[in-house]
Image (cartoon, rainbow, N blue to C red):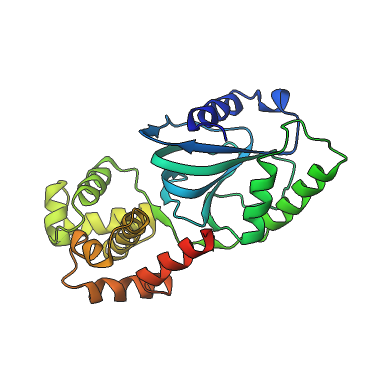
Length: 273
């Protein structure tokens, strides 16, 4: 399996528009792993679309005015030419897929987190072991065809946090992300960034489509998934996010994602066994 640094190099190669020349195939997959350290890319875009799937580890991507987290059994779809920035930390293992823009025109046109089915996962693992210059008339080409069919039917998941661009709101985002347990009011937050409470609410709705309360809840969902993926206990996550009790956190999580946090993570980890 290739190193994460090798994957980053191939990302850079694609960004320079040379991937098609180097590997003239409609789809290619490569493995990635990182035993230690971390990686943070600069904002960049690729001519090809790409899918990043994690078997284990943690990855966050900012793209399309949103923050995406990629938990186990999920993948991140980044369409061609979309500027994005990726942060990851070890230990990490997964796969990257490059898809030519004209290979499957029916695929999503926006960034999204998608659920990875067992069949799609096995197709991806198999393709990653095949030669980059596979036979376009052979079994590997048929494997690619099935993989594209599966990709067109994936379920989109709610792992998206809309991100504002206004500098004042970005200061708010940074402060709330750094200390999600802080329980100050909207009025206090508005005062801290130098706007009125009414202006804060108006700007947030204009830039994210969410009210302050809904945006903060979605932030907590994203942070909770991140912490749970690292192995944190539900009680610990509830405290870190400022909930008065674990039960109140569980209620919020279940209403947002349809299942309690412990069951949510157990289902994902079981699927990887």
